[in-house]
Amino acid sequence: MAPKGMMSKKMGGSNMMGCNSMMMDMEELECPNHPDLILLRDAAADEREAIAMYFQAARQTCMTDLFLDIAEDEMQHYVMVMHHISMLDPVQAEKLKEEGLDELTMSGMMKKKRAKWMKKPVTPEPEDIAVSPLDAEEMEEVCYLTKALASEFHAINKYQCYMEKSENVHNQHLFCHLMNEEKEHVAELTKAMFDITQEPLPKESD
Image 1 (tube, rainbow, N blue to C red):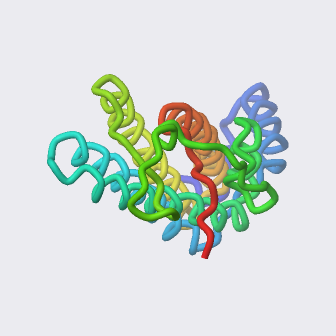
Image 2: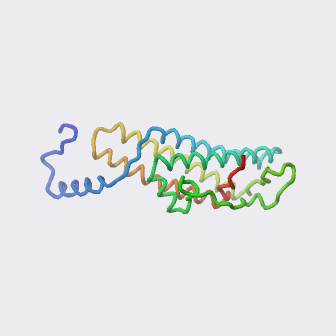
């Protein structure tokens, strides 16, 4: 077995050229690996799962207002977490911008738009946002998108860990490439989610 980092002398010329080409491409990859990113992505996945759970609870219980009010808080939390991710991960920030989600990056401004459940205001407290549950079809879509989004966050974390643990430069580059591919999925899934839930909500005033 060849020592780590060494290529077999039996490798053919065409394979060697392909390997060199891959190395040149990989050297241009940006691989953010701040350890806090793993914590932040776990937090983002947890927030999305909580939002979906509260929407489901609002549909299936008589405590609709309570669960939707908490869901709104979690939506704000998701935006906050994504802001911090974008500060440490320029690759993810760029993917979000490509999907028109500038408001999830620190450079983006929170868009002042009303969520669809705000079209029927109630009057208990002026600062409260009136919400209503998603319909059955939307709820099903949100559940699938939530599972997919959480899986992508966890996959990125795994690839970052693998990249850090690997002692082989080719494997490190592979994990970096896969990690960045999943970040594009995060942006696409978030955009699809926001099209249904009309997030992000207007920024809460203190």
